[in-house]
Length: 390
View (cartoon, rainbow, N blue to C red):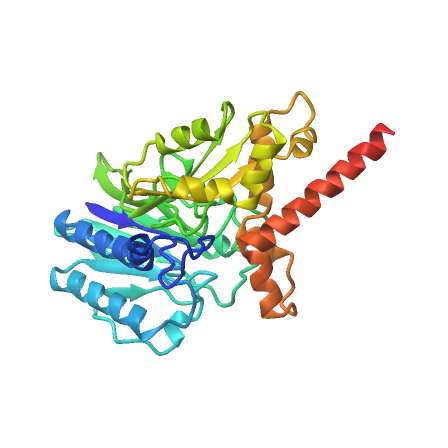
């Protein structure tokens, strides 16, 4: 048996954090990147002759989609139908109720999990019986522990769960569950969606997130793609496939002599494919260089010399005050990682009641809005630390 697990495709979601100076050739690649990744997944499913494809939530970025996106999905699903590959999909917190909205007809190989937990059966060519259990979101937030409604493994060769949610307790916004909740069901594989970073919560049986198919902003760094899963001695083993046309990446420069040295270091960064870089300078530099960086002069100079498969989206100097916020026995990278996690989009929305106007919500979910919040938090922490020291 072979199948594909692809969570959080987010078709229809534009890139964020790019400015108007992006070269025309890169703009064209950006405009088609998510679609190209989706089409590559379909190509791979056909060439690998998989039995089925799993989309555990947020195939779309919203419940309502443009005619263009609908046409893309309809065409690709038809390609799978022509070679008898089934698709099992559920809707998540972004595309909830998508199955109740008008969209182009899908072929009979598309099996949608509705809002109540349900199990669908797939009989393989080998005669083996596979049970697939899942559900779709009823609203943008699903605070109940839907995992409690999942049945334990029944009389079947393989039981697979599709689950769009996050680790947590009842009342948390995204179908909270615990690892023990899932292990108790005795499933052979849990195809998780919602978290955009590829994560393994449990090795065997596998419980994990495949991450987004294509990173869409500077926080979604690294290789992106899907899992190709195959059976081996009754175990289901995932193999990650990197198919994103564009990578987002970040790095720090801790030592430099002057602006020319900085540019040389940046140009020498390794780019196996088109890569958008966010670069933070932690080196000790003089006030003149800091002023040139803050004004954008240095960034423009760097961009003029970049190869065609590379772009720098952000160049900044680490705030010395921020670095001093962390006590000596805590590694700076853990502080920075924790702070970034607090300001992920999914967490930001948790603090915005539904009554908040859309334009305010969109601002604080943007890069600029999140940076504004992060700066305010850093300032508050600095003030409290100073008060404690006084």
